Length: 117
Image (cartoon, rainbow, N blue to C red; front, side, top):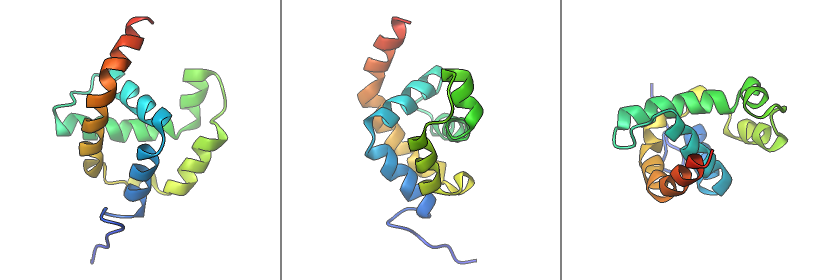
């Protein structure tokens, strides 16, 4: 079976996920904060990839929003999910470098804020 690339990524779903993360500072912060709370080892590609799969599954599941925030999934998150498409097609390993870079930038702020909680 022939594989097709999409704008340098494995497929449209991976490209769309990366594009949305890169263009949404709130999503970046939520991602790194949640991964940090999952005890992600940001030096380990396996740890990042594994926890990233869990994060996508949780973040785009209605019960996540009900349990964490006591609200329905926001319309902008539903729109994001519809834009990405099939979550199972995201090649999480391709997001590892982006997550490492974001962790370098955001972890100090995340740790500081979480220390107040």
